[in-house]
Amino acid sequence: MGDEGVNYLLAELGCGGTFAREALGRLPLASGEVTTRLPDNVSPEELIRFATGGKLPTPPPEEWMKIPGATLVPVPSTIDDLTKLISAHLSTPERVCFLENANASRGDPWLAQPGVPTGYYEDEVYHWLAGPQPEAAIKEAVKTARSSFIFIGALTSLTGTGVELVESGDLSLEALQRLADNTCKLFVGAYDGEGYVIWRRGHIERDCQS
Image 1 (cartoon, one colour):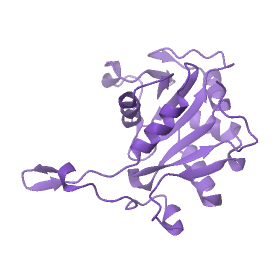
Image 2 (tube, helix red, strand yellow; image 1 turned 90 degrees about the vertical axis):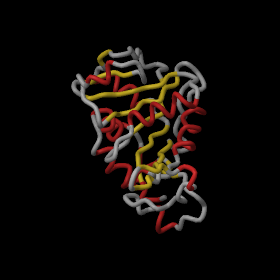
Image 3 (cartoon, one colour; image 1 turned 180 degrees about the vertical axis):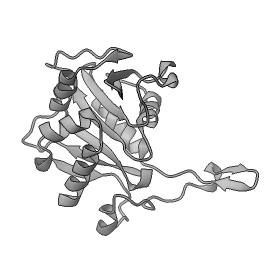
């Protein structure tokens, strides 16, 4: 995706929270590979129009929801592809999918309910999955963290970090920095909620430590 993909990634990270900004300053983003997962018939020109949707086919009528006076057509997305990417990464207990939640703030009542593991840095809210997970749990985590205006996640590792992720606990700045340092893939929302732009370390950089 060239410079356009890198520039979009940088802009999205710059709009994120503390973890995103640490990743922005600590990772070799310019030397990595930036890709997306969209149908082969999407043109190169459309691939770099990151702010607009319409890249995916409309869901079939059997998935539409009829309500009095209207029909709701779901927004198509590539969440299944992202779920598989995350699942393949979470092959050992040390491997982590780490997600920013731009929709939430510390103290939101719904965060007290059982669900995706959650932690806090100051007023910021983060979710994570560690080790092998069923696809349903991964999709739930993505849907919980995803917002209409920004979505940022990382595939990283706890190996060598000294970081312990504690449900409903506080995250230190150093923990966010160590998780950023160990990141091998980043993904940010794109295409008006339909897809994602994915960065991975270049082949000469280390992959996620196991």
